[in-house]
Image (tube, rainbow, N blue to C red):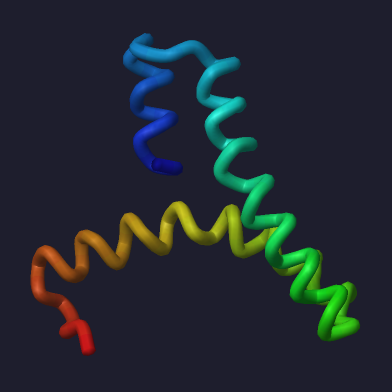
Length: 76
């Protein structure tokens, strides 16, 4: 989803506002789950890594997809 949204937006198939709304709909529930887990574990200091991970997820998925397609590594 995260990779497809910029492509849909750049091609004019969806508006920028819709793309932003969809990103928020993806991230917000994940944030709530992570926030609750960190509260239980008393590790709120780790919350900053959530936002970094959300940004890193996009290139990670793209790279892993291409590497898997070209058999550059094997899945377990």
